[in-house]
Length: 348
Ligand code: UT7
Image 1 (cartoon, rainbow, N blue to C red):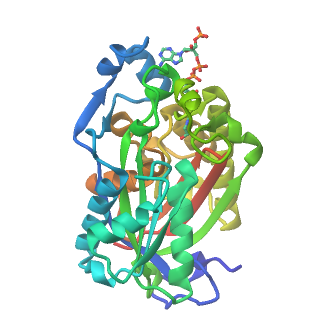
Image 2: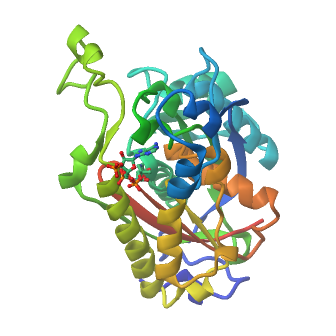
């Protein structure tokens, strides 16, 4: 496959390249207002602010008030993305919600969002691959836009992790927060207006047990016992996931860069999944990038699972660090085990 990188900036994009025709046209984010600080967690489990900051980089996270759902925040983010693009909800063709914390097992949260935002002509579905969800969902959207079938696809990465976290388990409860965002994926006419360039995704199901929520599915339907045994909460082997993330995330990024004739030095902005500051630093070291090229907001939001990447795009835009023409590298990893990397030219 010839890389779109070799195409002059003002050329019409070649239809030969599947990933050339779609771009992120706008962004919207949504987070709850209630802060759960490290000091709050010190009162709930045996931990300290110092340990959390040193081991993860997290200082606080936001969590929802009772009754606020995934679709509430997803709809808020989608409305902002549409408003930022000046696109009416009635023009949306497809809504994809990446989440592991849907409002309910069924119907899909995408259906609830469709109704809440008034996207009367849209179809939609949820995509469940935890922290890699947003990158995977964007690539699905790109296929529909690149093949000319759709013009406006809303991709949402949103998780209400507080709904599946055991706040007596100090290894997990300190990491996660609630929130996320939405992007509008549209066709792109020329490279300089932005385009997806390439991606690499990978799953390794042999690592499924290391990060999972065992209860409530067909394997272990909900019962008094599953509730008593706390099986409706996230269980993780932190160090194993840490090792996987620190190794595989940069490896995928390096392979993606290499096959496009690039190195870390060519990237203008690196937007990694916000799981742990030490994982981000390991990836940055491996890719040979200065931290000035990296978006980090884990200190404020914690790990919001599928929500981290759209939130990080929001941070990048808010800080004025994402500019038209920038070559941007995204990276994610999470339950599955799964990982992904995406390369794109930013267009606004
Ligand atoms: O998006 C993907 C989601 N998950 C992840 O990305 C998780 C990746 N893993 C991690 O981020 C890290 O493994 C954690 C932050 C979960 C844990 O950090 P760690 O440096 O790997 O700690 P550890 O599990 O190896 O534990 C080291 C020590 C243990 O004590 P001992 O046995 O050495 O006495 C733990 O019991 O730290 C203890 N510990 C804590 N101490 C204070 C574990 N959690 C805490 C805590 N506060 N919250």
